[in-house]
Image (cartoon, rainbow, N blue to C red; front, side, top):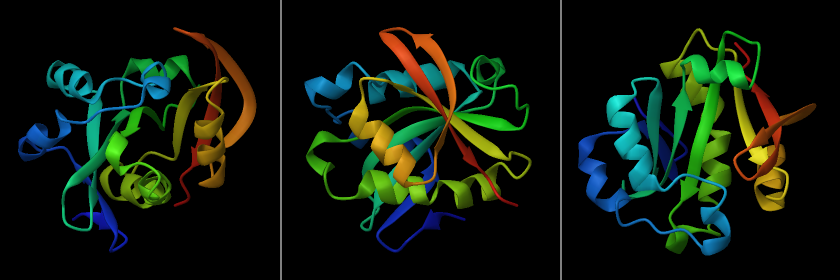
Length: 165
């Protein structure tokens, strides 16, 4: 079962999406803050804790993707053993500024309930310099509870989205 709004849907990654995802580009100011979509697919092949989620438009065409991680890495961001770690969120450059990011994140709680029913929180780390992403995450319900950590390119804010049962 796919989770959708009629305009977009979230689906677990399938090989049939690979060709389109490999054509994704990101603007230079975003590249520093997220993983290259093709690199994410490559890493996920050998790491079962990286669950790649594809964002499809109303025609079923991939417009973005992210990972929900379940492994030991989650412990670097929260003490909650029932949390997922959202990483590598990106929307293809030519599909940005159309609401896909916000709409997909608004579906996240429903998606987690369906595919990860024992999980009760999603956490993420956003670079303190990435103000547009911070604002987006706050708009869709992620909370800044004051936790910080050093990331590869500077201070990161840990944000939390509770999953209500």
